Image (tube, rainbow, N blue to C red; front, side, top):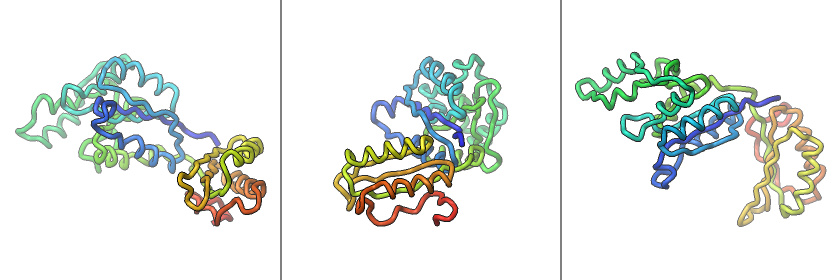
Length: 254
């Protein structure tokens, strides 16, 4: 089962300088994985129009979806919209519905800087429905989010189901075996199940076991067979207790 793919672009000098810690890419990864979407690239860019213009279109061509976060506010360093528009060779236009929402929100306090937030790449759409005070801007397969984590999370929640695919199924095993000794068993497992995603994570200090192993696939039958094969392959006593409950347990293994 083929996965739909995504890339995440974090925009902001504050992240690259260490003044602000990126909370948005971990959140998006945690949200997209249960939806069956495989995040394959995370890129952090400074507030530079030409760099945004150069980097976003190739990502949009390579991946099913691109999610950008940051750089769409009212100040001088909010240049994501301009960068995306330039990269795709379109202009920046005032979106009248966004402008109306901003006028209603700010009233007499509205400034030209506020209205900058109503600018979108020509041809972009507003998505997210009436639950949002300000919709999400989507240009082709690029979804443009603000960098403030609480706002990004609210906006993503409103369009979350847009991205739902066949889910990944996950099994986790705790193995009390040195990773160097475990490696051969995992290589053999991958040879038997080439589409399987296998993770090996040493525990330091050991937490009652030495390595956490994860098995992941979109095919629940393959997951069940692979888990059984690994259990059979490992030496006696290597597995500690029972595996943690899968995120999406395959039929018959609840």
